Length: 413
Image (cartoon, rainbow, N blue to C red; front, side, top):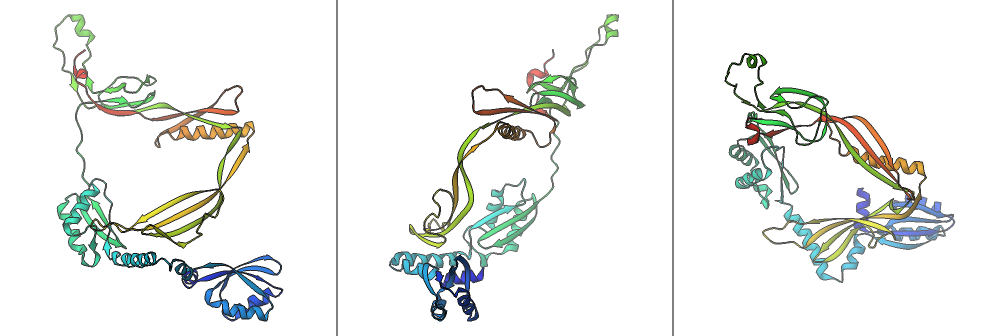
């Protein structure tokens, strides 16, 4: 890696060498300390090779002695880049200025990140750190990490430990929060169905069951009621005695409600599919934009493929005191694509459509649900060149959800 970087800085060329004594030329070049790489044999007596710029004169002498000849096919490296931009003094000055700015600005903190927080908002930690002297634009050598950590622990009582780590221009504030046991909510509530299903298991901790196992419920139905009304006693009714009614109990319903729930997925596949797909070949270009001008640092200057898609990542230097620095580092990835036309038979089309429908259905099933059955059904479409499949997944899961009591639920029947 270091050798390739040094070759880029000093400059290197791509050559095509021809002759009957290519092996002898290469052996003599290596013996004299010339660095050759990417040696590729094009045909007998013809090869491609790369060599550093300072080795061209020695290689020309060796070629004469071995009765070979070579031709320069490409010039790569920083010296050739500088020659191209030498005519544009503004661009060259901008590049030098950008390098100086990057060097100077690397001594400042430009990014502040919070890790380890679950309850405390990150904005609260960052604002507290700013009060202590850690903010965007802070000089790293003037920052007292111990004092900042103490201040954050003092101002945020929910935090038990604070650690600050500086990497490059980013400061990471790691915190550990105190374990606070939340108070138990005892306000009156029902347990209702979060979704439709067939009740499989019903265990009541508090409250009164409003349905039985085996009942079908729809979304929003009350399963465990928080209103417990007394039931009339048959023996008291027979004696005709007037007994004052027992008071209605209002509680917070709790329990376990597991039910069968069904999820559907749809998938289709055409017998003839047309589109584009990536071939696996790709090229990356790293360029520096200064004052709207592009300076290619690495990679080809034009797209290397006829058909391609691109992915672009742009990194801007952070503005300092409302001053925007016109320097961008752009990474462009070129991915070669090719057109395809696939003819699929009926069995493969059905399998592919079923796979897509199953993936869609499984995407709707909660992680903690237990899948009990999968049912696939082909949707008949006459005269169509598309196979359509519907998949139904049956799962058992918890469907109970706590919902506060409404005023009408508390009224006597």
